[in-house]
Length: 200
Image (cartoon, rainbow, N blue to C red; front, side, top):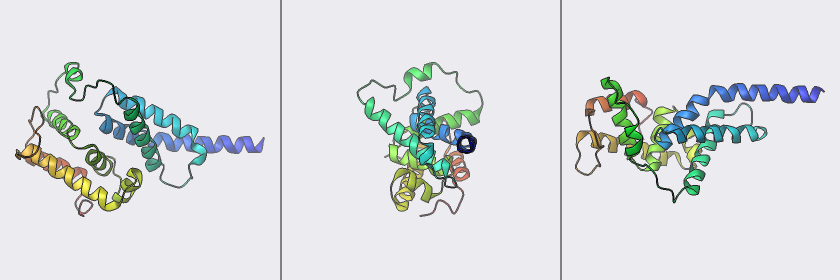
């Protein structure tokens, strides 16, 4: 009887901590999937896998990084399973279902989101982990299974590509509807990645 009570207390602690990281996991899923309903499905699948594997989690370690690693693996498994499906990569059909934002800030964020979807997947993932999810370079490297320098390089290249997209660089692909100015983009990226954390 005492063993069962101990297990239930452990499950309650695990569930409580799991819930605190739900928004970070969901945000990463939305960034990987482009903000579609698929992100919610993958988040749910990742949380189910985390719950099923809760015995393998070591209490006191970084649960958010553990959950994001599970989500990342779920995302790549989904891509492999659905590689031959026709996708709405450009969001043409999805864009028809959404009302256009009325405030300039929302428009700029929408443009930034569209531009980020044009980044190579590894750069977008690194930028979202460090800038949006708030992981350190070391944590992001652990999640992605690569060296810290690789993460720093990917974040740097992602930021430079975004700045080129909005600054009108000739080599960079431009978003379909560019309404954001380079100064706003730089300010948003600086707010997302505090000075000092970004440097190589």
